[in-house]
Amino acid sequence: MSTASYDLTQKLIPFLDRHLILPLLAHLSEAELFPAEQIARAQYELVKETNMLDYAASLFESAYPDEEVPGGESSLGYSQANVFAAKREKAVSESERLQQEAQIVLDVIEKPEVAQALRQDKMQNLQYLKDNYKLTLEQISALYNFGQFQYTTGNYSGASDYLYHFRILSTNPDLLLSAHWGKLASDILTGAWDRALEELSSLRETLDSRSGPAQSLTSTSSAPLTARAWLLHWSLFVCINKNVPSGPQTFLEMALAPAYLNTIQVSCPWLLRYVSAAAVLVGRHRDDVVRVVQMESYQYSDPVTRFLTALYVDFDFEGAREALGAAGGVLEADFFLGAYAPEFVDAARCLISDNQPSVLTAYRQLSDRLNMSRDEGEKWIVNLIRDTKMGTDAKIDLKKHMYPFTRRSLKKRGVWHSEHRSLALRWASVLQEKRSRQAMLENAVTSDG
Image (cartoon, rainbow, N blue to C red; front, side, top):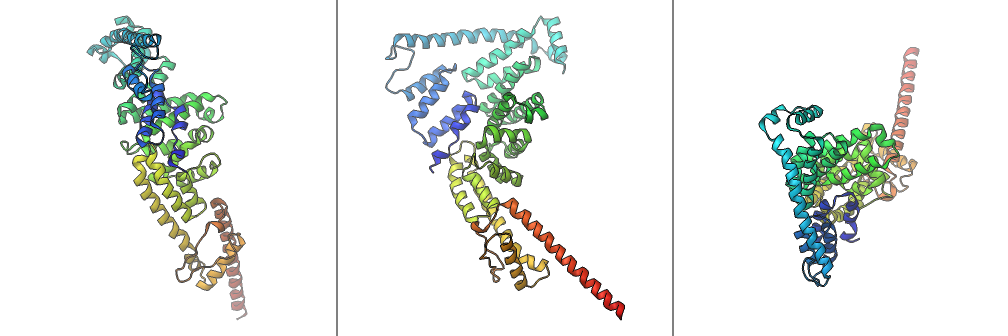
């Protein structure tokens, strides 16, 4: 399959704000995975509904090179040109109005005496502002309105500031949640990664407190599930990011939390690519990740997830190497994982190297642990493999002291370990019974003497 066939952009888009989609489309344009004109038109369709009017005009030129930009006399017709010009005029007017309303609030809260008087109790703060400065909750909402408008114009830094001040003062739960999302997106788009990581954690706490641990797994409402799905997708910008060293581990722990893992399984199994990559990069929770990847393989599979199943489920080392070879190209083309591709490949090679000898030499050591000669051990191990239906042509290379596994002769990991443990316990029981009989015989001989 081609690299483009593994691209996840179309699956990610429904869970992202239009402003967060733009960097993904820009990446696709640079990677040349899809026709440039197709990407340019997609970019224009996103931007034309915002107040980034100059950017929209430049994108229109790229998307429709044979037509004039709306805003002047053009082949699109005089009426459409007027609509575009009217939109620009309206945006300027609205910006001035919203800024004036927000400035009234800022002029008050930026006073040193007000800053000192404000406390943790929002209701007390609102009463103080109303009594002393005639500020109402509706007026405070002007900070949210202007912050939201700034966001639509692409002024993400300004949006972050206004939404931050709004959250300090407001008690409106719906607007506060919206401001949370807006500030997270703004911090992502300005590259303020420390603030974005804090905002991600804060937003997760808010969502979890709204749904509750029990409701999050059992509620029939789609709202909590949808919110968690959005948060998981937005977290990719923050966590699968070289500028956030703890990011992959943060994402992994979040994704494996029961409510969020359930969300991935139900709504967005393609995120298992990032869960799998994080497990390899971090070197933790691999057993949990392998179990989920194997369970959901009927829904989603790619070279990254197949690497884990080949190595840890099938013990197919050749298959793992092949999957790793394909995964390298998939990772390099991925917007989030591209920077991690070399690191992932190195870590994956170490896993193959570390895992293969441990499996191959386990049977060499088993003979010594069972107090058997190598020949006795070989026969016992071959019988063990035959009993567990792992192959009828098993043979140990005593020169190398290894048993070469093949994919054909291996059962699924969980079943194999279960049967292996059962046989080991049975063997231990046989040994114990043999020792008991031998001890009884020795005691009998001693008594007779």
